[in-house]
Image 1 (tube, rainbow, N blue to C red):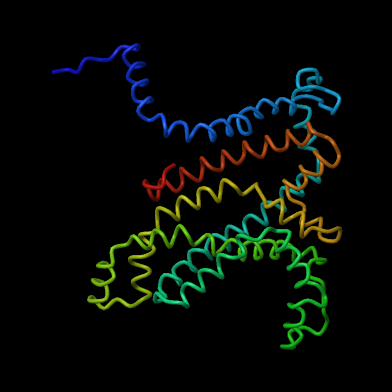
Image 2 (cartoon, helix red, strand yellow):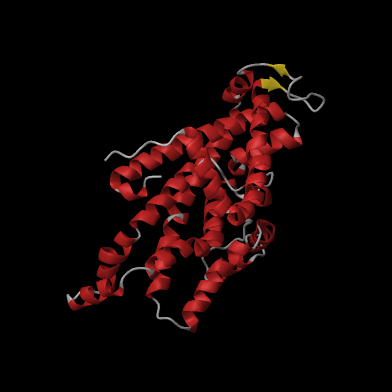
Length: 313
């Protein structure tokens, strides 16, 4: 017998009854919704200044329309495109190193026997994540200086005869940015992988050992396939953020000597918008980057979806 379709008033009444049952939970969620509406959705209206010649004496409505003029200026700005090159270079290194290291580290931690040593390793690897870039940046500036720890180690093992300040060498900055970011976030990046591995049925490993599989074969045949979904999801989110660099890291480590290789899109937009007061230019650049990021997200989702349907967002 075909089920009778509910009318709109009946659906509204049913929604009201269900909402009333969940009222305590809805009240708990309400502050988060209000926060999101005020700080995430309401500011979207401000994107109109990307198409206007906006100054501090204007309002959003009174500023003069210039259409796509700001985007044309961006397209002709060589310094903006240099920041794009730097952003992509640093992001690809972070993708290559920072994406794979947490996977390897999580497997190594998982393979350790439960005990004090395992907990100590996990704690030490997590700690840099909770320190701000102001603290870590100060440590790196000290370590990479001419009298810093890195130069002392290199000279101790006779790997160099002359101490150098690595942060003043623009050619080394991409690697410094990628490796330091990996150092900060690798331990925290293992959390999801370790949680997934904790749910793997131990009988899989027991059966593999009975069949004569060693540790490496168990990792390749059991652990990695079980991590396939979470790896795919992390890859999608990482690719979508290729044009988003760590602004805090850049502001701390960038100086006049390495700026040509350290200036990324976020820091360039920050300088143009807040330091120089060109809000329309900065908004147009940010809007363009956001659109490209969404496109990258969709493309990465499609590509990983072809390999693993379970990872489609």
